[in-house]
Amino acid sequence: MKYLKELSMKIFSKKTFLNYTLPFLLLILGTSYFFLDYYYVDKKIIKISQLIIVFILLINIKNFRRIDKTIIYLIAAYIIGNFSKLFINDLQLSSLLFPSGITLILLLIIFYYKDESVIKKLFDNYLSFFVIINIPALIIWFLIFFNFDLTYNIIHLNERTLSYRNYYNVAIFADWIFYHWNGITITRLNGLFEEPGMFGTYSILLLVTDEIFFKNKKRQILLIIFGLLSFSLTFYLLLIPFLIKKGKKNIIKIIFALLILFVFLYDKIKFVIEPLILSRFGNGGNILGISRQSDFDKFPIYMSNINFYQLLIGNGIGSNRLDKYARYSSVFQFIYELGFLGSIFLALFLINVFVIKAYKTFGYKILLLTMIPLFSILQRPDFGSSIMLILMVLLIKKSRAKLVLNKLCESRVK
Image (cartoon, rainbow, N blue to C red):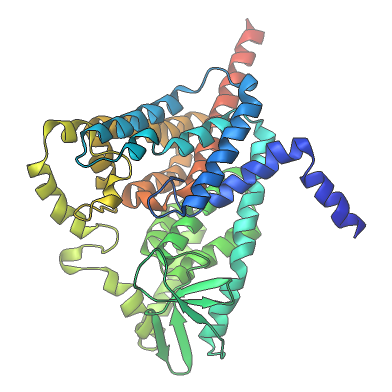
């Protein structure tokens, strides 16, 4: 009891509350979506997030100085994405007054000016929180695997008609992805998220973050298990460069295990492999869910019917989900919302963070890891979330710290 009292006093002390507790709450609120004001996000979450952000900004405004030019590229993209709303038909005044995406920029600025040790502690704890809170779903996955009789209720998410199984409010599974064979049941692990693909993407992004900055082996093992059982093709593909970076021995072990699995056990596991993995490969070698074939079919039609303003500055942030004829789930979302001009600024931001800063800070080998979030955000922009923000901030701050150190060393030499 005494320990809990001391812990609560520590958590809610003024300094800890402002520097740690509130930013940690923001990361949790932003876990499911890259943009906190995303179309599907609950309005209460948006309002709470914005109030916290404004409060933190007002408290820390005296500490704000010159901002990293990399973040300016992102600000330019968002200015264009909001300005382009002026050219949308039937636009409501409220959508003009509210600057879409501003929460992401403000979060970047808040974390950019925080002390690096505080940021690392904050993000390290977030990684642990993500793993711990999804362990119950992993346990339930194994109980389902061995056909334990578990109770659940059917729910619907994001106003969709699709049915999901909610197990004890700690695990969600898609009701239509259950395969039964010879006394066992296989399904895709969702964790606490709507889509197993989203859970798999988050797992690989956190795996990369952990490998670059924290190297917590136990946490990495659990994140790999999460990703593998999500049967996310994105996770499987992006795990390859991660394993290459970890060393050749890992690749040899994986290839050897897969050969044994397919040569000797394929007949026994094909009821899982075929619907969950092989079915993701479409006609002509297309990878369904990665190539976004429907996007490639729709986008040329859109391009042939747009005007100059739409080509240059797009249709505005958030328009992709509001327009039922759009709803692109790939890099075309950026072009649709920001146009080519806004997309160029966004590309400059992403390249600066995940390529230039990463290379200058860690060397060329790190690009094997930083290419993972870059590819992820291009193939599914809506699977970024505050997890992507964590990696961005850590890379920017680490790059800045090394630049300051280099200048200090040069001044001493002179």
